[in-house]
Image (cartoon, rainbow, N blue to C red; front, side):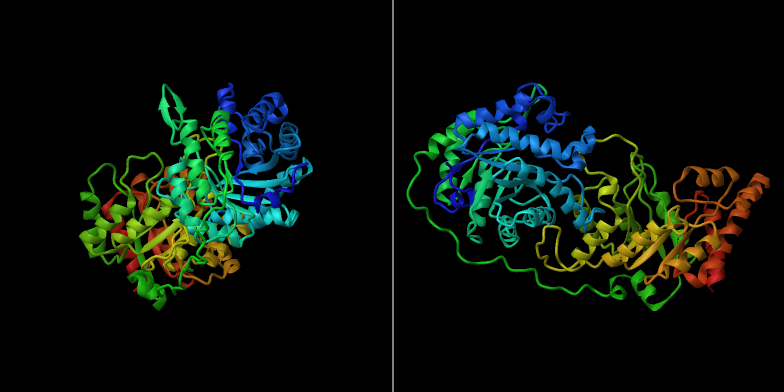
Length: 614
């Protein structure tokens, strides 16, 4: 009869865990594009064989084959309705293989989507999604829950709370993952990981996956100084190397066993393996573990990771000339610049100079569409500011951009002297991507605005204090003629809550529809109106029918259709200027976004807007 797992975890002995499930299934002929969790139903004997191999190798703790067993990831394989069944079956298979002497942990990994504050999934919804398989795992007889390979502290916190809401006394082993730099993918150092997981109620804190035992040992040396909780490690068998199209892990069983000794001396209580490890690795670790005895040195110093100091963000009026103008209530006149094709920006710089000489004070630098051959907008914006003296605002799309990449690009843009950004969610690229890869709708403009707010308070994505806050004036996009008005209003309020300081509208063609929307919105932040002078009936029909969120009134489309080609541009300019005149009392500025590259048309719009605003 085995003792309760909680009791064993408080002892001084080293528990040996199992190794990789996915690697073993792959070695036994299962393709990587299959749902490994689906095998609990369709090939249970194969899953059982892996569990039994680890038990025979000497594992004292095994994990269920349920790492991706929640509906978001299972949906990619059409198995989301089988979540509870797969989790329960996974627990029963492991329980049977474990017998009476081996402990079983219910394995769950991250959801594969972004949760708030960086994604659209609420904390409450994420908690419910975690609890669905957790209930089934508990019904299946697991001894504890293993939360593994998490990269987002906020997400693992929700997962821990989900377990605790079901069973307050259940052992929870919480694993984050780190890179070769010793930091989580979001930049959180190991000491912070250990402290946070301990504070949030994890029974055991630890690390797994991504790297081999060397970097994990260095990370554990920092973790043991700030927590008295038991520590668990399950490193990869080194970093994979591609050989003839197959990924091979090069750490030998003997090498992993050597590190088991080193982990033991640091006070680690559970040692196992992750990707690339096999029953042979676990057998070697178990043989070494049987020779280890005696008291272990405590490295806990009772010290705590200092909390990031509260930093008040810089006032909007002090961030940029745009911020000052909006704060003072000056009507902003901007023009949108589309990045040029290729590596030469000479004509774009020339156009920017022309607009500046005509009275334009700000340039909104658009982002090139996915898979285009246009120049990136951040270096272009910096070039335009340097060459013309006109202040820019970068329209930054979150489209298929990881949070860490966003942060890096925002750091770089800030270092180049840029201070104004407009975050938009962006449109999908239209290209296929792996089913479990985070995509466009998982990190949206709300998440980006929350990220910028952190940076403006001198705290990076990983929760680390920065030397100084950034000074971003953060704007967001706004659809003033949305197909779903309630959704757009709700999202805009969330953007304001996240810290948006101004908004740039999507192109507006219907003043009455925009007025009705503004009546409902009652915005608390200034809105800059975007207008597009339509130059042809074809362009009007294309924007009305092919671009999501744009609606060109039938009267204007009819006027353009009945006009001679040489007269259509004049009608478009007239309609755009009428929009500015009608909506000027309700907005803080205007951004002209000419679809045509004609300098003459651009100057005509500039003169018209300047005449209206005096």
